[in-house]
Image 1 (cartoon, one colour):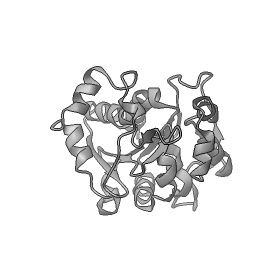
Image 2 (cartoon, rainbow, N blue to C red):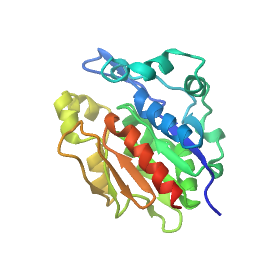
Image 3 (cartoon, rainbow, N blue to C red):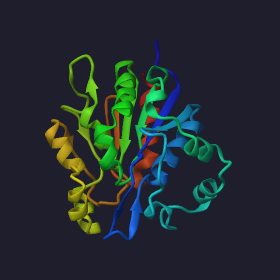
Length: 239
């Protein structure tokens, strides 16, 4: 039986400060909004969920370079379908993962904090994978792979697979590596190496870049959220 044409976009519940306490990180808005739009346009029923049912919007994701045009209109309209779903998210523990054919981990730097231990979100992703669906992530989203296993093998679902995600170079370029280390966070490239995945990236840290490896689809950065979702749809259509 084909996986259900329903998608769950996971949202980070964490929040923290960066740049010496000057700015707040949380959900990078476009990393959830862009895949939401792509999946809805492709005929998916799309839900959002976080580990605690709450979220904080990342400050950088609200700047004009990242949030403008129709995206800004949608964000500012608290009665838009996206905002209503985001502002009224269930806790992941209250979500039945068996009803979804797609799991897409949006992110933001804060995902490095909660995703590695987000057991309820991870359970949903494991269920989608076990049912033959598509599992995807973007930017810092691979942090959730820290404890997502292939139930058939007991191994991490990314073991032996090609993945991408936010580069260590970008963390250093932003000048925030020391602060991230202060959270006790593992960078995406480090996680890939530890779990036996092959990390790949585009030449530029802000290039639109994604990788498809079977039913696993990953994107490098915020600019890749839309193309990653489009690739998810392509993979799903071939299941």
